[in-house]
Image (cartoon, rainbow over all chains, first blue to last red; front, side):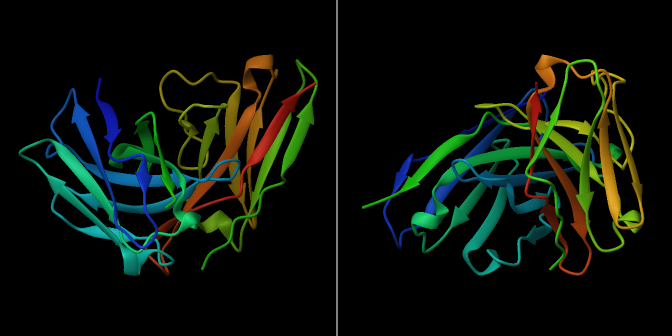
Length: 121
Length: 108
């Protein structure tokens, strides 16, 4: 049973870059038909998809965030990462990593527990 | 960009049937996924590809999709079904996933 765990700073200053890592255990990040995604959720609000990466390195991003987002994968560490630049208070949210299954229409079947990132000086 | 519209809230008595809608332009031509999220927890996939259920999801959860509306139906609602529910589709015009705004299901 694959498990995902987000990690990274819980506090980021405005204008800086938010960096998070998702560590995958219980399976290889480079095997199977999966996309690896990031989703966020501001307190009391809905889900917002940030972007995803395939193990080949192919990426898709939310158009509203595309200019600030980079998602990468490190197969040697079984991790994938999110970088969001020029953050503002509006980027304060719980950030989730997830695994999207090709066998399920690329729906996110496996999720991390989420990590709260606050943007504040 | 593609917009998905969900009612903010739906209320239902235990044992009754809850229907949560997700509206979008010609959404019937897309595959819709549904997630359940309880307070303080990560979302859980309950229906994918309009009407399929992942293993472990009760048969009480079903989905349909036609025209401009997709529907998540929860039969014989239980107190434990109280949660926020989100629909999701792939927007091929922008190559991105889109979530609906979410619906809070209250079990009376």
